[in-house]
Image (tube, rainbow, N blue to C red):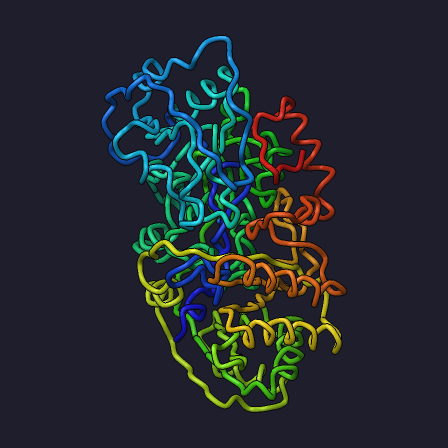
Length: 525
């Protein structure tokens, strides 16, 4: 199976642990995938927060303020201007976790994200929070010293939204403790998806998530969270019962459908980094059952028929069936066409046969398997971890079935990449089913009526990858309703990620962050 085949649910996300933006986390063979953040296939502060990992050394770093270096990262704030220099020594001593400045040993590794393309971005400081109290102190310190702050969970943001030049990166990765009781998972915002699934497997439970094992639960959830269970159980954000969050004023909130319901609504799908920093979640879990898998491959000559058939499958298949379509550019100039799918009933044969009937042609290659919960997690994620990898990606939300001209244009965009020998893929994930319904308490994720999401993905660097993504957007423009906030890309209008939720999200922003403390080029203020 190819790399992309194992990213069935990469969404994600995202990266940031805050109420904001995330990155590789949902559905890349969309599995969140094997070895990269490809599209697959996303506080209770203090005493209520889950147990955290042992804190690192509290030794105070040097007081030398690091010089800033230029960066192409869009999250670049103006140089800090305060009447007095920040007292880094005092701040470091106040933390249970650790503060890194550019002169601190370990700084180079501390500020890295999943995608190496952001390694050149150098935050003024990196705070490795050991507990929610550290998060609160970091927010207050950054606000009082006029430092821009961005949160980081898994660090998979497609646009590097969880790092910043001339500002503070707040890493909640160590806040990853978990507990389970009566169907509810309580988890720290720094937990990674593989660890969450492995923990829940002990209790015969699971969550609908992306598949990339190193994606942070926070970024994935805050942006929505698509994956193989989306049609059966809804998005990751739909399973949230409550969240612990610190807002820009440093105050803690335990939000739910009945406490700060507008903030709860906004955090369920509005993206990370906009409204606050989440430190813990409580999720309503789902059964960890065996899954039936199918993988169907067709020749390039059947590509248009496969897209039409996949669209019908997305519209009419039972909610227990899911399948994402991969259109991959091959180095020999041809296209690879296949669907990786599952059945939550375990009967993959029936789901595969239905898709073939919609395509109107039997697959040229066909495999059917049954996997346990953890076998499926490892299969879709390509193992238990994922190495850092460079890539460029974007997305379009399909408001309905594409017509013949749009399908031809979509295939043409990938074909052009194949002829140019650009490694590229269009990965189509279905929505519908439970994802089309608003959860109790509501959620800001705006694409309930959409057919699915196209993720444009390339591991190439530079203009060739950008050209492919631009061509992809142009190809499906007539069918596009907007884009998925966990697949952020530079240069796209912020409003395209929030659809009909934009006005209400802006109202929440004015209420909970009136001074726009949490701000990036992707903020919906």
